[in-house]
Length: 269
Ligand SMILES: [Zn+2]
Image: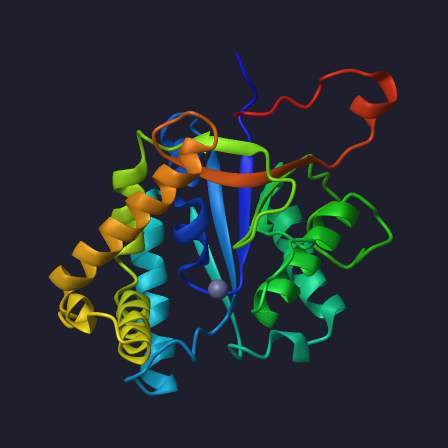
C-alpha cells in the first residue's frame, strides 16, 4: 500500500491554488486520501474594481474558507500581509512562517508558484515562490529555527505552477475533478468579478464585443469562468494527450534517489 502523504499549498492570494492546482488538490484528497493544508500569505486587499480594501479582506477570507471546504482541505491559514507588498516583508520572515507550517503538519509535498518561472509579473507570486522553495529545502535542518515547537521535517516533493511554465513536464489528468475545481474557484466571487470586469475593460479598449462580459452576476461569472477554465485545461491536456490537465514542474527535493540511483520517492502522477 502506498504511503499516505501530507500536502501544503503555499500561495500569495486566496484564489491562486484553485486557478492553477485545484483539480490536482482534489485528486490528492479524493483519490489518495491525503491531508491538504493551504497557507495564504496576503490579505487579498487589492483585487477589486468596486470593493474597498476592508470589504475585500473580509469577503475574500470567507471565500477562501468556503473554497477550501469545497475541496476538502484540512485547514486554510491566512497570514494577512498587505496584498501587492509581500516583498516588503523580509524574505526570512516569510520563510520562517512557511517552515513552521511545514513542520507543524509534517508536509511531504509542497505546492506553490514556481520560483524560477519566467514572465511572472506579480511580485507577490515571485516572493511566495522563493520563500516556499527555501522553507521546503531547509525545514529538515535543526539549526534553522530551533525555537519552533515542532521538530525538523523533510519535504520530499514539490509541484511548482506558473503562468508561463518552465520545464513543466508533469501534466496531471484532472478530467475527474475539473467540476470540483470549478466549484471551488467560483466560491471566490470577489475574484471572479475582478476577472470578468478586467476582461470587459480589456474588450472595450481593444474594440472587441464587451457585452460578453457585461453580466457580472454569479450566473454570468460561472458561464464565462467555466468556458475559460475548461478551455485552458483542455489546451494543457492536449499537450499530453489527455482531456483536461493542470501543469507543474515536479521536483524531488532529496538527494538520496540521485545518489543511489533509486526511486524511493514515488511520484503520484
Ligand atoms: Zn495571485
